[in-house]
Length: 192
Picture 1 (cartoon, rainbow, N blue to C red):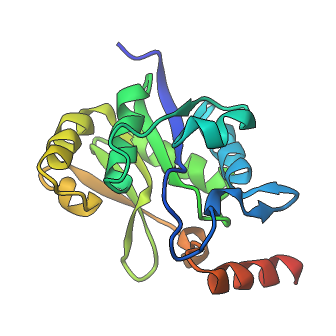
Picture 2 (picture 1 turned 45 degrees about the vertical axis):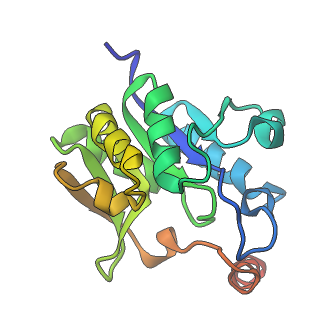
């Protein structure tokens, strides 16, 4: 029995190699990027946790859960979120999508709650699925855990055999910041 229908998890455990510094801690709108995204996710889902190193993020005021298989990519973060979630659905969001809003997250969650899929992935205009802007039903957990144990770390591959639905979003929603150049473009748009 679940305590709630929905909660959110923000993945903050990546290594940010291409950025050269921790993406989650980049300054954005007067706070850090992760604070912005976690705030939007919390507004949409009512409750949020961060999946990553507690020593780095514990001071932000949200529960922080250590990634159970750190170094195994985002699939491990999703599995950890599902293992610690108290909800039937967990809204999973990467920490590097500054254009996300509570409205889009809420609409994605409502789409998931109203349907019968195991997972609902955001899908941009070009058809690209974004598994790090998605809602996962608790039923996904055993399948994703098995994929992780088998070394199939690519999230899209791990979802094989599950009922996956899509939720259309704008290109801006799924635009993330992986390099200093991409971050500079985002900052330029913010200043404009």
